[in-house]
Amino acid sequence: VIIDDLWGDDPLAREFQELMGRDLDRLFRHAHSWMGVPLMVGQQVIGMLSLVHHEPNFYRPQHARLVLALGQQAAVAIQNARLYKQAQEYAALDERARLARELHDSVTQALFSMTMHARATGLMLEREGIPRDGRIGRSVDQLSDLTQGALAEMRALIFELRPDSLQEEGLAAALRKHAAAVSAREGLRVDVEAPEGRIPLGPGQDLHLYRLAQEALHNVVKHAHAGEARFCLAVEGGNVVLEIADNGVGFDLSAVTPGHLGLRTMADRAGDMGGTLRIQSAPGAGVSARVTVPLMDRGADD
Image 1: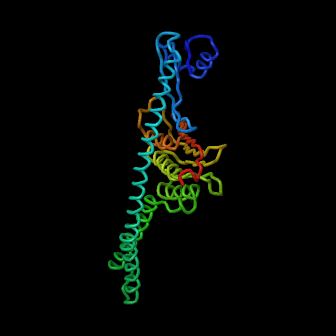
Image 2 (image 1 turned 60 degrees about the horizontal axis):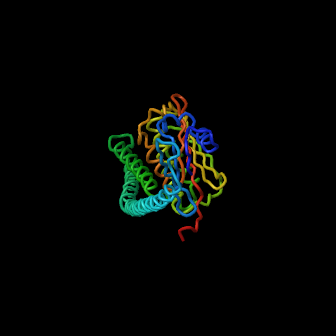
């Protein structure tokens, strides 16, 4: 698309002016000519290559042909980078699953054995007539409590490393379990609104969305000083939408530096799925993070 003069009165220029609003003067104050080329992979638009020039009527069809060729190369490079990052993430997931298995087979079993031995020791003390409220009895009870607590924490860690419910029951069920765990641990009320049935997500989408939800809720716990948070998962048209909202202190979006509060990580995850992240917040008004991702064909990677 070529616009001869961003400040002109032709239909394309007026539409661009309406689209940009107050940002037009801030971003294009010294520009007149504008050319935009979509970056496409297959039938999917993954970005836009935008060029500006200070002179009106600068860009010509020969410029467009050159930029189209550059745009195709840029789109391929971006897609290759995304695929490489995805391959790295899958390798990391395999390693997390291996570590979870090892923890389950070794440390968890050892903690479980210690818990059983502590209970057996307590029963033996009772049979021997040793009071449970004495020094030895209290020590055994403390040992039992500590091992049970450590076992619970280890199981929670294994779930974070390898959320089995995600594969077995789907994203909604995994979100409900994670919300319940955070609520019990942090004293934060976390509600989940999601379909009862399983959403037909494409390969890797469920895990990306789950990790994104984890990051968002972690931010709520760490920064929001909120009493309530909410997950809302839905399918809208050809997209899956995940919204995470809280009633915390909020923040000024214009004052947030790049990468602050984990927003960069969340935006990258959404971008890796070809989706978008929209943050809404204001001081005292809480935060709403809305992720919109196109539903993938489950057989696309088969």
